[in-house]
Length: 396
Image (spheres, rainbow, N blue to C red):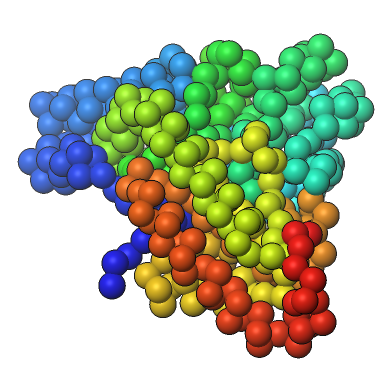
């Protein structure tokens, strides 16, 4: 049976070009970049070449790119590094209620350490109101962290507008954005957005797992995330993962080259899939903003159905999808994002996230549109609640 992978927001398959670039650094080019002999110099050059490629993808200076073990570490470092370096100025941080758990759980942990965290609400589409951010700023506010686009519903936040308003109200507040879902998918330029910190991850752009980066604007005061060595300008200790970083650099280079072409393709496939589902299956709701959303993201709720049952039935048909964030897939609780946009628990439980990638085709979309209505109908026929309303099909 053919496998159709539509969970590219969870992870992406590593490209062959990326693997080819990495392989020599596992074997003959095994040097430690901190050493001064030939092997070390070779590794150091690969490290810096990759840093430049990642910087080019987001319009940064290479010296502002600091490699991490992934997006989660980058988020943790951004929050804790700014908080610990600026405690003398205040202990208030503002974020949104729909952030990735790497932000939310870290903020909750910091609350236990005496920091005050404001979790802002969002509207029905998942957008943060700029006025809410500004009205939440106090003399104690040291940082605002708002994700660039949501990993579950795909809504893109107006980061440039948000930063401009914050600069006017509180010029000394540091702004961070989790851009794990946007880098390589839509244009991201740190200078144009005017952000101070930005998190990104390799495995979301067809690179290897276990490597990411934090952009830190020159001049931003931030505490080291790990100590014990002089790597990454003494800000992130530990021998660098050269094969992973080389892979990230290659993936970033390819993403920059192909971004516009892939964007147009994904938009077309996304729109066809959304239209097909909404027109053929009743009692459905598109989650997230209809237009201000990631080009590859589809998130739809189906009444009278459990998302997990949908996923298992799709898997039996060779379709790999998700009901939300891969990082919370082991949880039985409904998505905090869907609850935050106002969905009741029973509808939030019936959500399906399909996230497209470079390997998906129009034939894949057609197959999903052929299979999904049958699965939904079968599951609904098992629901005692559906019998009451099946004679009156409508979109919720």
